[in-house]
Image (cartoon, rainbow, N blue to C red):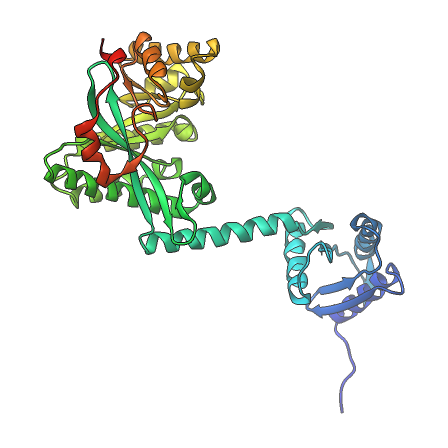
Length: 388
């Protein structure tokens, strides 16, 4: 004999199902899929906005008091919604998307509905695929470093290189960082990539040293990396793994904005790195906050004038004024100053006229593989206008 007795929870769910059904149309379908979760299939809508009154009625119906065994119960609903064919998925995925939206509604405070964002889901999927592919590129040694020379224009002296990452993609060829680095920003893999760059750069310093040339190398470090206290220990380990590399030949470049979230912590990390023998440069200086307090507190040896100002300074008085201002700040605070974006002889001449003798840019050399650096150093000569 089978018992037909119900529990209070079952009675509550039955009452709610009956009430929800009354606010739906005859052509719509309501089904319980487990626990306290229901699925409503609402059809024949001209546009997604048409369903909003129905969703409001569902929320109101669920929120009304329910009497079970002389008890007056109050509940609320969280509704997740996705639209077909805008969300062009199969039935199983449509349910999963609606479920994701429902949990968003819960997190937003319950008793509300949330619409599944197809565009955001596509963006997340694309990013996850990009992260997985970059991980594979790192594991399979598809990433390589290029090096852009830095020089003293007035003395005609080569002073070092900046590392610039490239992706030697097996199908798409050599990719610039702008095509793949944005997808890893803020992700833990960016920390791993920074460590790989530092290690590869120090390996290259050792190779050049063996060939008879001492080449200082600067490496860009992301904000996430710099704000981790473990970074100092990891850097110490990397330096220890290259005992024949002088730490003074390694410079870490950070963006102006990198230290703003936790200035005290970042300054502490920078000082600990400096104690290991490395130095720091503030990259893209002039594009961020550039406050005097900020500049005074950060122990960076060098300021790098952002290339956007250098490129336009020949035609734009405001950009020239910014270049002059950065040079003046560097002088006042006893910092080195180097300009990015010296694309022509005229750019170099103007920089020299303003008192900036260090520069890098296409007018000096484009980024190149490590194998070409030694030959370039031997052959490079500054323009006569710079050394006059």
